Image (cartoon, rainbow, N blue to C red; front, side, top):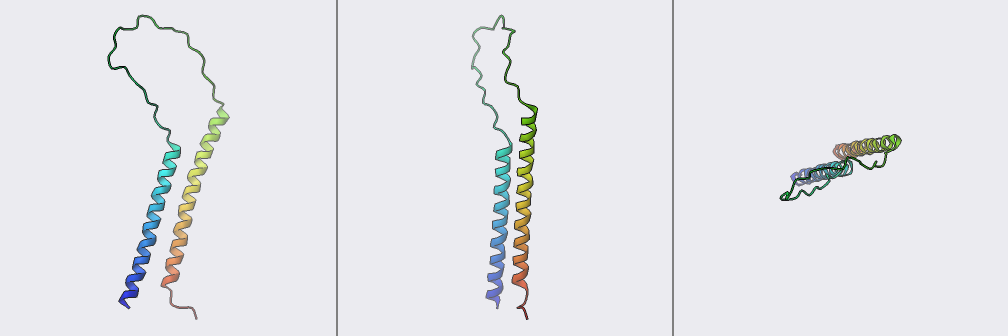
Length: 107
């Protein structure tokens, strides 16, 4: 009898561990996709001579379409909502499985 209780507890702990690892993996994945890497800037170690004059003309860069930026934000939000929904689904499935294991046999 004690062995059965110990075995059931070990199974429950295993599910909890898998759930925690899954949540952390999902969180890391969302953060990795959502946060852009900082641009590396190389600064010179020593400046030999100061720049006397700078060219004030600049070339215009590419203009981003506001619709593209809105689509990117919308896609990011959909990924986050989908991840949260997946985590909640896993919690529900795990809870039902645990509850069914604790029920006495059906009549």
